[in-house]
Amino acid sequence: MKQTIRIMLVFSLVLTLVTVRTAMAGETAGQILAKLEQLSPEERKKVLIEGAKKEGEIIIYTSMRQDQSTPFSQRFNKRYPFLKVHTYRTASSRQVAKVQAEFNAGRHQVDVINGNAAAVYTIKGMGVLDPYHSPERKFFPASYKDKKGYFTPVYVIPVVLGYNPGLVKKGEAPKSYEELLAPKWKGKMLLDTDDYEWYIALLTHFGREKGMQYMKSLAKQNLSMRRGRTLQTQLLMAGEQPIAIALHAHTVLDFKQKGAPIDWNILDPAIAKPNSITLPKYAPHPYAAALFIDWSLSKEGQTMITTFGRVVARKGIKQRFPELQKVKYFLTHPDTIGPVLNPSIKEYQKIFMR
Image 1 (tube, rainbow, N blue to C red):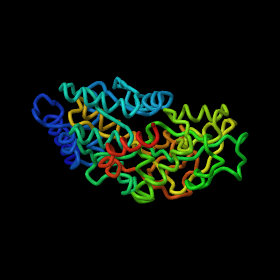
Image 2: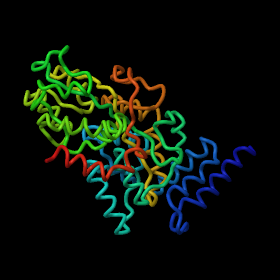
Image 3: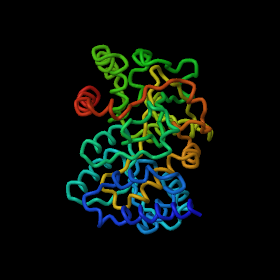
Image 4: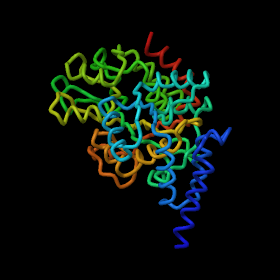
């Protein structure tokens, strides 16, 4: 009985202190949620649910594809049906512009943001994000998350070379970046117009001087520059070009599994891009935000992510494409990509977009 009374008193106290944000002038979402860390998992969950019920809705900005983000949010909504879930899908680059415009105007309307490393670093640099130490973070390798709790990968995107097996025999497809410089591939390769993370990762691996020499040599191969990895994958399967240098693995393997004319190799170094989930500092619905982040990183949420063919970093999750787990990846961490992003964008455009 004493234990029950104690739990009820803690529960009531926390709700009194942190549920009504108007009474907590100046507190951020991260500060509100940090107060729950002293509670037991059961107590914490009760407080989150009760707070989210009062909030009634959640607004999510995501770069996940529409055909994936919709069923993902619907599954979350099924678990927490008292919430109205509003999901807005946009590319990470446009996401940054949207968040910045809203933040500058003092319109704090988004509760959760997930995007690529460049977007996360940029948004964090605006002062938009708060740290949030979800209890689910302990199941993720330290190298995949930051110590302060600003971002955790909801999924990871391995980069693969894609090729059309009707135009390139399996044994003849390039297996290294150096092989892309061979004369026989000149004018026969696709590359994205803004794959800055891939560019920075390779320069980091090769070293600045050697990396720049390589990129300039690659640019002389008369690359077909196209925007969007999905578009490039479709063009590859249609036979417009025999090779696409840096595609997203989940898309390629999904098409291949369905019988499409496409195959792949992982080049050395193996590169992977994390898509991280974050908490905005002034999220208007912090309890709902915590529920969504926790669920996205949970065993249930991560398992659903794998059904889309995506790779997850959470330990103990069965992957749909286990063959993508056989190599060690160079991760395009936000804190690695971010500091050199702007000059790298200018270099990339100068080298490949002339």
